[in-house]
Amino acid sequence: MQTLQPHRTRRLFAALAVVAAVLGVTTAIAPAADAAVYSSCTQSRCSAARSANSTWASMGYPGRGWHDWPNGQCNYTGGTFFNREGQLPAGHSYQELDVYPRRCNASRDAYRIVVDHTTGVVYFSPDHYANFYRL
Image (tube, rainbow, N blue to C red; front, side, top):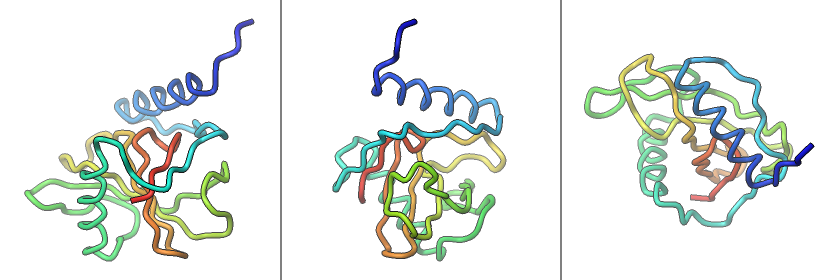
């Protein structure tokens, strides 16, 4: 039996999460335990994550559910991020929020910001928690 390399495993889980989100399926897919946490955000979508964080912050990081967004769209906050895999500092309080707005009740994608309410640090995950980039 062939063993998947860690980076391929992360890609597989991220792809499955995206497919599940598009289909509106609730999943129990966990991020790879070897997820990386980077001290800065160098991804091409970091500016979109910073913009989303600015809007969410101006709304006081609201609770779980759909929320009106600028330009007549909606965006979703999924509520508590439990950090089950322990990628981020333990014992902190986290919230996960979507980056990209869309029509209300549309399927979610894999792009998230995670707010550490204990320290105020915000992370961007472009691949549904396989990696975290500090904003």
